[in-house]
Length: 424
Image: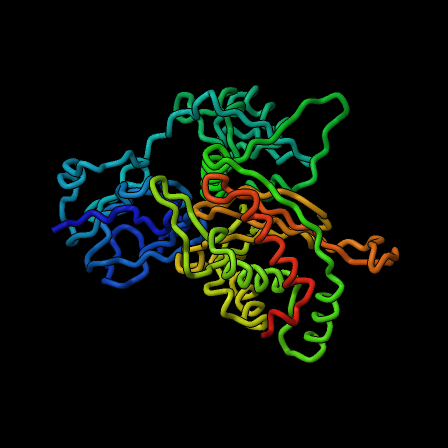
C-alpha cells in the first residue's frame, strides 16, 4: 500500500526544509535505508534516507523548493499503484507545485505555467554587464517592452516565467522577478556599476538559515532583558604562553582556545552564568557545553564544545577546527550544535576591539570577545606598552544580576592573565 513520506524535522529549530537534491526520480525503486534526498535545514544540508521499500510514485517538493515540516515530501508504493486517493485524504496535505507531480504508469502531463509572482515582491538586479537577451520569439515569447526591461535590469529573460497567453513574458513578469536563493550570494558579491544619479537595489531570497537567525535573535532580544558588562584583560602572559605552547606542539593554539578554556573553568565557579530561563524555573546546568559562534556562507552557526571545562587546550583547539570545517561544508549534525549552556562570539580576528552580542537562547549569557590591542598601560606605577583585550558579557537579567556577572568576569580575567592556573 502506498505510504506518504513527510518532510522530517531535522533540527530543533527547523520549521521548514528545502530539498537541495533528489537522489531518486519518479518510477525508481527505493530500498529502506537508501538515500532518497538531501534536505537543507536552517543549519546544514542533511541526507534523508528512506524508511521503507517501494517505488517512488510522487514527488511533493521539487528541488530548490521549501516546504514546512510534516508536509508531503513524497509517496512510495507499488509500481503502478494509484496514490491519488491517499494524497487527497491526507489531512496534512500541503500545496505542492504541479510540475513536481508525476505518475509511474504514464508520462507526466505538460505542466501549465505557474501564476505570476505576487506584486508585493519586487526586484531590480543591476549588473555591470547585462545578460544577453534574445529577440527571437521562437525561443523566448516576450513582449518588446519586457525584453527592453530585462536588458536594462540585467535579467536573463529565459529564466523568467511568463504569465501572459501561452506563457508569454510581459512587463509585470520582469518587474516582479526575484532572484533564486541559489544565485543570491553570487549576485550580492558581484561588483555593480550604477550610473551617477541612478537609484538601484537588489533583492535576494532569504535562506532557511537567515530566517531562523532572524526569528531566534529577535525573540531573544525582545524577550530577554539584556544588560552588558565590559572588562579589559591584560593578555601579555597569554601571548607568551601561546608562543611557548605553539613552538613545542603539533596543534596550534589560538587565543580563542584560551578564552573557551578560561570560560569553562570560570563557569564551574559561577554556575548561575551557566543557566537558562525556563519561565517558571531557572535551570542551573551542572555540565558546561560552550557554543562557539562561527560565520558561514549563509549566516552563523554555533557548534558546541561539550564539557569544555574538562578538556585541555589542545583538545579544544582540535575540536573547534573540526567543527568549523564541518560548519563551512554544511556537514554539521544535530549533536554538533545542540545543548549549549554558554556561548562565545569572537570578532577579534577582524580587528573589532569591542562589541555586544545578542544572547543565544536558551543560554542566560553570551561573551563577546574583541581583538588584542597594543596600547600604553600602567604597571607598578609606570606607563609601559601593553596588550589588552576587551570582553563584554551580555546577561539575561531575569537570571543573572550585575554582581554575579561582574564576579564571573573577574574570575575569567584572572585565568586569562595567569594562564598557568588553567593547567592545574
